[in-house]
Length: 206
Ligand SMILES: Nc1ncnc2c1ncn2[C@@H]1O[C@H](COP(=O)(O)OP(=O)(O)OP(=O)(O)O)[C@@H](O)[C@H]1O
Image (cartoon, rainbow, N blue to C red; front, side):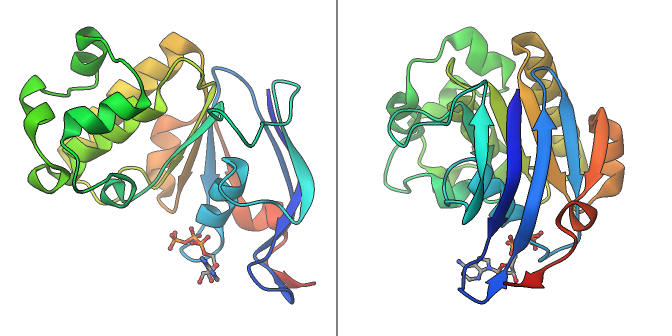
């Protein structure tokens, strides 16, 4: 179980982006987090995945506090894959850095062998996002956070990526948090949906 216990975060000393949010995500569950743009969803995702430190509260993953070193069992996939990939590396180097991936697994994610010899700038957003998914789906991963993962993609690519991801999530019994401002997407993909504004009670002063 991924337990988020009363976490608060502010970029500045005088203002919480969100205050005292709690939620629980079970293995195998697909949980939606809905909220409008700018409300603090990405910040929340970064805190839960360990990129930012909560000012208050705690995050407990399968009974443990994730360590600073080593691979986090909570992996985050964001809206802009190009921002997380070294532009000077060939895609085969990008993958190699995260581990060894079988040809079957890459095929399942729709990654063509031919793309391995290309640089990130020579791939589309949907193609790059598949590499980000591969990197996030290493054996240590137990929970996946998809923050507006397909917002930039066209309808067909979006549907293909969601079909693959939901299959893999079920197959590996991962817990998945789907963050989006698109309620229709959450209704299609999630077992239940939480409203970010209701959870945080809106932004408030310290
Ligand atoms: N590094 C930062 N320093 C200061 N303020 C920030 C920083 N990053 C984000 N913010 C502010 O925090 C607030 C929440 O931003 P966040 O990106 O978490 O929202 P969001 O709900 O994910 O929005 P969107 O859906 O548009 O991406 C915004 O007002 C934003 O301007």
